[in-house]
Image (cartoon, rainbow, N blue to C red; front, top):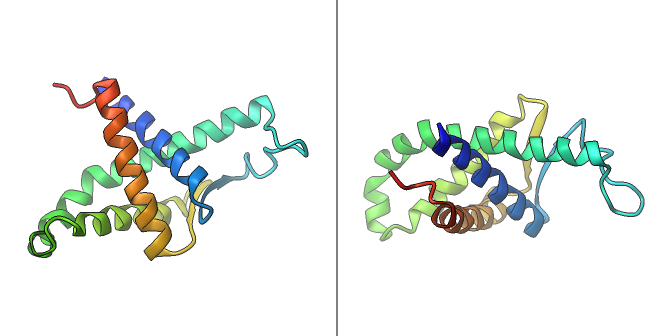
Length: 142
């Protein structure tokens, strides 16, 4: 249970960093549309809503990675071997895009402008941050 919560927190952090770096990726909800004041700072309760929105999208991303990604990785094993593992970046981008599609049916939406560039770059950023944060926090220890 502790490792699941750590994974959700790490996913939320990685999604936040990716949406901060990439202009084509954003997480929106009705609670965060007016979250930023004219000075550019968020109000106290709006910050909590924004944090919960990122954690919710991190939860969806974790569920998609836990259930869909193993099947897709297995089915695409020949092309992954042929490309010496580089196809996993495309798989990660597809899982991110699937998360955006699933989140479109919830009050919190992950918005990705274009599949190819934004999703690929976001997948790389999220993968790097997830690996580093997992090593620091020890979430993968058994």
